[in-house]
Image 1: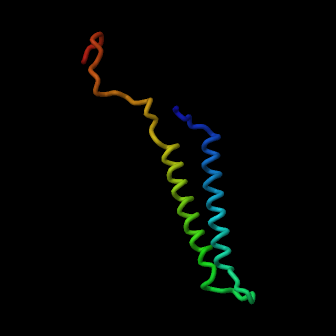
Image 2 (image 1 turned 135 degrees about the vertical axis):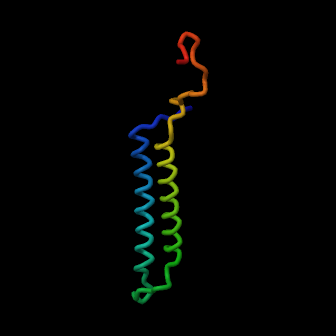
Image 3 (image 1 turned 60 degrees about the horizontal axis):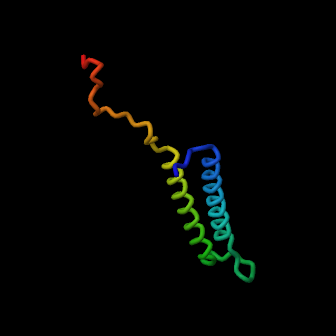
Amino acid sequence: MRQRKSKKNILMVVTAVAVLAAIELWQLYVFVTFKEGAGIVDVQGGSIHLWSAIIFGLTACIAALFGASFFLRYDRNDEMHITSPPNRRESVL
């Protein structure tokens, strides 16, 4: 089944990438402001938040790459066949 490019599909891809990027930024913020039990900022704590931010960031980049490659690809149905011989009714020159 051939999927048509539409504004709805573009909006879905842009929304998905924006949500992934927002989650990545939130996880990075939580990592930077991670506090230990006494309420002091812990520089080395919260490494799970850092790894979550890295994973969500890479996922957002990959999703944007696939979305752009899908919506910007050449339409295969509009190919021009320049290797076919001319019609017999038309002269070559």
